[in-house]
Image (cartoon, rainbow, N blue to C red; front, top):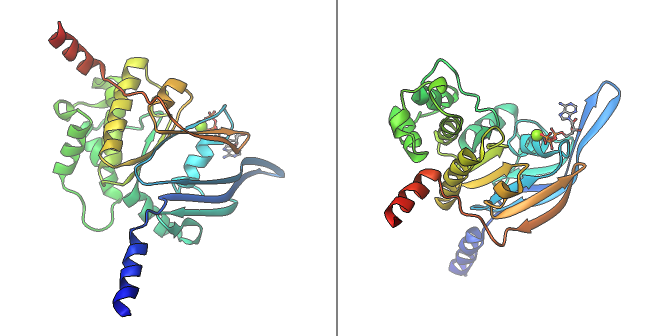
Length: 261
Ligand SMILES: Nc1ncnc2c1ncn2[C@@H]1O[C@H](COP(=O)(O)OP(=O)(O)OP(=O)(O)O)[C@@H](O)[C@H]1O
Ligand SMILES: [Mg+2]
């Protein structure tokens, strides 16, 4: 009997669980007496290994949603479970800790420190890390992962926009978090550099990272596996991408073109 019970317990453990789970989530900003509803009754799940693009007009609540799921702000009501833990019940210290370990952030403006070279920018989050810190070699490895092994000593001014964003992605990877959140990570980049960034994100997703990314561009969104559309703070649609785009970086295209020619 006991054996049967244990077997059932272990089977239950193996069932996939959502990584992010939102139930009737609402965010109302208060400005004096005025209430600004930014999110209204959002319910959704994101599963491990997904690559989700968030779209919607300006002011529809995309960044507010990213702030909630990234534990940078708290909802006004509703529930948010991150990897099964109720974020609403966590202390600020626990939220900060979970953010450090589980989530890497990438923003539209790369937020690199101008005086520091690439490897030092990547190592920045380690200053806030509790417990054993990843070594310097982890920063080097993160830069290799985004294809910048040859740029470790360059400062942001000595890098292109796309390279700067790749340094920011390497910085997001330094604690090896299972989730990457991007709020318009290609918003400041031209098409060529945007495709380079999508190639990096698709590679990370193939390697098992779960990615949630805001974008205004349909073409960029089609590099994801699923598109959520927001309007007036509400989830308007939730669709799988049927004809997914595969990002081919210009450098690789040139090489294969040369090989073919
Ligand atoms: N800190 C704040 N205080 C008050 N209102 C806010 C605050 N942040 C956002 N809002 C309002 O909440 C709504 C949603 O804003 P949010 O930044 O989430 O939109 P968004 O979809 O990211 O837009 P964009 O595409 O322009 O970045 C907007 O009406 C905005 O004015
Ligand atoms: Mg925004």
